[in-house]
Image 1 (cartoon, rainbow, N blue to C red):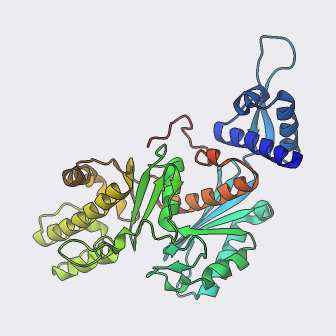
Image 2 (cartoon, rainbow, N blue to C red):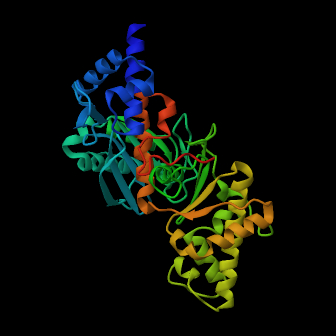
Length: 388
C-alpha cells in the first residue's frame, strides 16, 4: 500500500513537471495537493534517478532559501518513433519531455521481404540511437496499413504487402528487443500534428494523408480513436456516388495519373494536376478529385464532428488554394463548415506521432496519470487550451 502511494505521488509530480514546465517545489505542492515534505522527498528521488534537474534559482525579496525551478531532463533519449514508408522511412528520437533530439531520413529497401525489412529496421534504429540506445525504453512504429490494436496483425497494405499478417510485426519486436507499439501511419501523423502542427490545441480532429495511398486518423477528446479492430478512419474504402469505385481510386497519386490517362492527357506528376490550366480534360480530372475529397471530408464531419481537418501527404501542399472552397462545399452539404488546414510537420509528422505514442507508454509505466498524456509532449504554445 505504501509503495503504491509513493508511485502515485511520483507520477503526479512527474506529470505536472512534464505538462506545465519548470516549477518550484512550492508550486508543485500546490498543483498536486501534496505536502511539502512529500514533494521534497519525491523530487529528490527523481533527481537521484536522473529524471529531474534544478534549472534556475529565483530571486526572492524575503529571507531564507531562495526558490529553485525544477524541470524534467530533456537530453536523454527514452522513446523512438519510426514511420515506415514505401519509398522512405523516418526515425525520430525524443526525450522524456517530448523534445526532439534527432531525426533520420532513410530510403526504404526496395523488394525486401518481411524478415529482411524487420532486420533492417532493427539495425537502422540502433544506428540512429547510437550510445543512447541503452536508455530507450519504447519504440513506436507507423505502418501503411490497418493495424489490429490487440493482435498487431496488419491488413489493407496494398503498397507494402509483405508487412501484412502478424509475421512482420513479430519480427520487428524481436529485432528491437524493446516494447514496440504499432499503429496506422495516418493515426500517428495526426498525433504528430496535434502536438506541434496544424491540429495543436484541438481535442477533436481528423487528418487525411493523400499520397501513394489514402489514410485517415481520428482523434476524439485528445486521444486517437482506433475502435476494436483498427478500421476507424478507412474512408478510402467508401464508394463514391455514381462511380461505384472506392474513394481511394480518386485520392491517390496513382489514381490521379490513371484518371488523367483515361482522359487522354499526360501529366508529369499528380501534383501538377493542380497547376493553372484551361485544358477541359484536366479540369474534369481535378473536379473528380475534388468531388471525392469533399465526400471523404463530409463523411468525417458527420461521423466525428471534428473541430479541424488536416490535409497531409505528398498531394497536400498543392491543395493550398482550394481549402476555402472545400469548406464551403462541405457546408453546402451538411450545414456545418469545418476548419480545413494543411499539415505543418510534413513528412516528419508520422515519426513524431510514433515517438509520442512510445513516450506515452513510457510515462504510463512511470505512473503518470492519463489526464496528463494529452499535454505531453509539451507543445510550443503550452498555454493554448484544447478546443472541442
